[in-house]
Image (cartoon, rainbow, N blue to C red; front, side, top):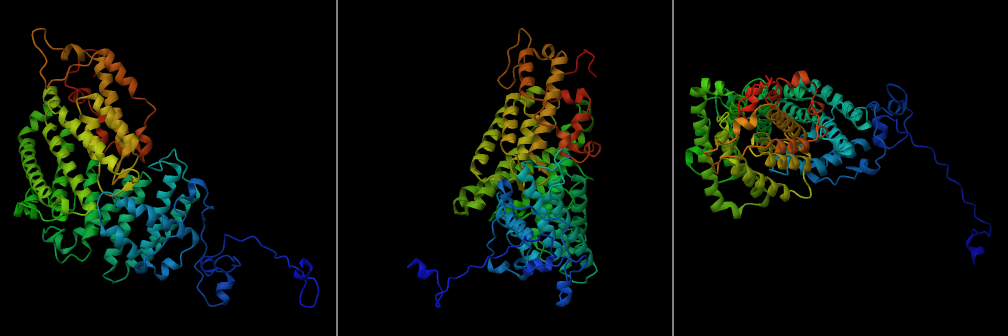
Length: 566
């Protein structure tokens, strides 16, 4: 029977033809690759496209290697919804498809981890299918983010080799985006305004992941200038409630959240998206009505309070006792006003929580919990910002710091196992910055360091590695000064006086040495995460490294002794 099967109908044995396989070229032009035909790879314009009357889209200078191991992140085929399955997305190259898959299936869900947003769920994807500038910026951002995940870093700082295939591919995509945006800038299309703003936002995120904070801020300023020229801003209206805004509100909100976060770095004065008068808060629906009916209304008031606080608090953190006394007449009324407004907002939020929280979708419940968590952090920061070297007053709030630390641990547990590595919204990092930098109990500060290291991620311009590095350096400097000065004699209680319950017991020399040993000098090198130390010295969060020792000792509550330390 086998003999019969191996014969043709005429009784002759069948001959199997060997198929000659040729090695596939990865250097073909984009047009031939999309058509899945062999390209002759003629420099400039391939002859296969020219002979068939097609436009040759040129050659990609950099291609991604086949995905293996950790490089397989994002390499799955994306399942596109019908609303976004456009011709552009169907015509992606294999490398672009891989990066788009990562953006669609991993980056967007991570970005929406804290708060829901139409900006990422709808607007960016819809614009990418119609606008080449947005499309290539999106692919570039995805490639850089994918590169950081493969290398298991948050920022592509100088010690991380930038010449990987993903990085070079991202730079090429970024160049295509710049070129397409420049071509569209001469257009009179009113839609161009929104295209420019979305690309600016994508450029900002890409720059931050690369540690290029100054470039990120330049791109953000470009977007803010465009927004400030819009009619509602010129009329001093609230951009979140204006009805004649020519761009989508979710896009304005995206810039507003980044604007608030960048205040931590003290770039060029106050935020630009909110009015500078102190009546901003009074114009919100929350302040006018005395209640809120949705998370969106609450977040509108929160944005204004957060903007004011991120402007006010950096002015206070690093003042000496003499500076606080000299400026107290100016700072204290503003402190009281912000405490009053923040406290009123918390009471309204609590009332909404009691009546409506159980009826909210899970995503909104999570967002609401984060807002209340931030408000408690704001109130604590305001209460301690002008205490100076009054260590007893600072120690009175140790229980509040501990409560915030417990709340942070609960939030982190909620985000298991899919904690985002990059998000535009502020989550736990501002609060952990407050605890790890200003808490009077050094053991609580060490716990905050451990939480920062347990979840490496970025929230807007906040970077957990950078936050931990700054706080560790500050704590190391404080403890070193305490060891090298007469701290213990200054802070030891008199023989006839007992320590009150709000007063922390002075650290012994042995405890100081133990705490210094707990901070490994190799844990973080904070200048590795920024583009240039000369630039970083202008940031509010870096000024602590260039202050006098007396200003620094305000945080530990003693005067610098006569041990030769300036």
